[in-house]
Length: 331
Image (cartoon, rainbow, N blue to C red):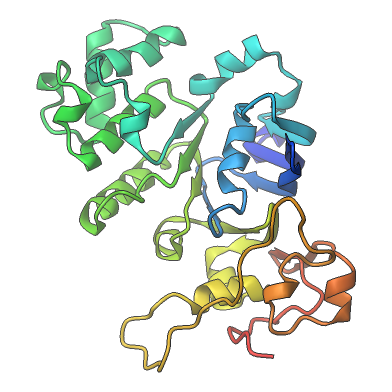
């Protein structure tokens, strides 16, 4: 294996994405580091507003402007820093090398164009048409298991169910054989049965060299699907590691609190655990560790200084007082 093959498919280093508003600066992504390997599914979890979607938008350099701005960091895809590319070069990267599946297909699919036209457009724009375009479109729809793909090319998005529309989005995303797929909570609006089918589709897509960054707030989905997990809080990755390591022996109190708040079938608990308080105001995050106002074991050190990332085996975390694998978050 060459050095290029051993290197991560995607390497994000010290990424900082800020929004400049009249009320102040929102540090939506504040010093994020992670990698995605070829053929790997990495889960990105956290509460709403933690910065998960902004990580994906930053990778594609689609942060809303003029308020949003990537102020520092590197996003390296196969040796190329995407932040150093021009907008014209990035338009080539989007869809061809990096594709994205969004949460709501109805807001992403054009209601006045057929599904066949929309899948075919991605192929035409990126010059990936070899042979008959219709056959390529049918092949993309078949790959995501849409029944009767050849007969549904002329159908419009409203003629598909929610699960089938999400599969159409996946067909558009993979039609140009991208290297990296960003999935931003694609199963949130789906029922459990359809969600399971979509997760199986994700497993099938990663069997080549496709790397997937899967954004979700559902820890159950991460446990079923992902190889590694990144736990995000208030714009920062507070813990990362393999799913087994992080879920069975969390180091950060926030990770343990998230796991403890998930109902377990058959477990005898008088009351489901809940994380006290609210996420911090992004305009004025607290000094020190950003989780300390909600942490039951916070002390003066936690309130005074931000902990630097520490590594224990293959797990990296930001905490002055790691739990050392204890699931309990009681002081």
